[in-house]
Length: 110
Length: 115
Image 1 (cartoon, each protein chain N blue to C red):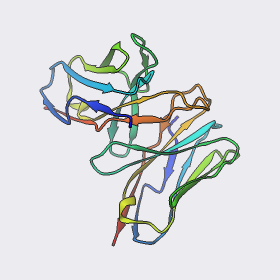
Image 2 (image 1 turned 180 degrees about the horizontal axis):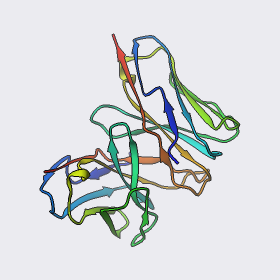
Image 3 (image 1 turned 90 degrees about the vertical axis):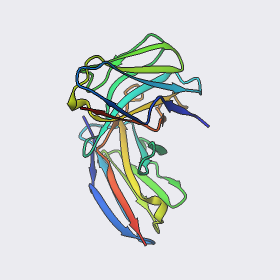
Image 4 (image 1 turned 60 degrees about the horizontal axis):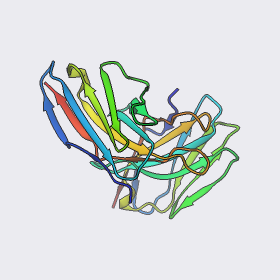
């Protein structure tokens, strides 16, 4: 079952923060985050495994609340280069294939 | 760096034509995937393969078939293209990681238009 992402789209000014949420109705083993810039391939950002681990990648970090079956991606002090579509992907077990959400479009403007 | 290449960036075909989309990866990955990407629907899995000559249906396999004769190459075939198969097609490859999860590396995509 496809995870749900919110919001569908967000527009930020440079320097503002944003949070993108990904939730599932099923218990999760892992959550993956990818970013796709316009006209380019999706690029892997990070994986979070069950255990509530928080990870960081430059000014982009994420958390995973396995009780709520939800992950949040935090973008701090956004830059123009953060613009793109962010996808989460979820796995119910380590042997499942990843199922991707519909994506969140993020636009950062000067 | 992992490189996944797809044979065409843009393709225009007519209804009823047989269409081949080719994908090649250079990192000796076991797993390969074909997705289609449509606005508001995200990435939907068509077929995947965990080994040569092995294939598994994804979530939307109808109207498609695949071929994996060599480890590095995974082909998507539209036997008789229809207008509802107009979409962006993305290929990806992966190799199980330390925690047996699946970090996928994507190709640039092929935008297929069926007239």
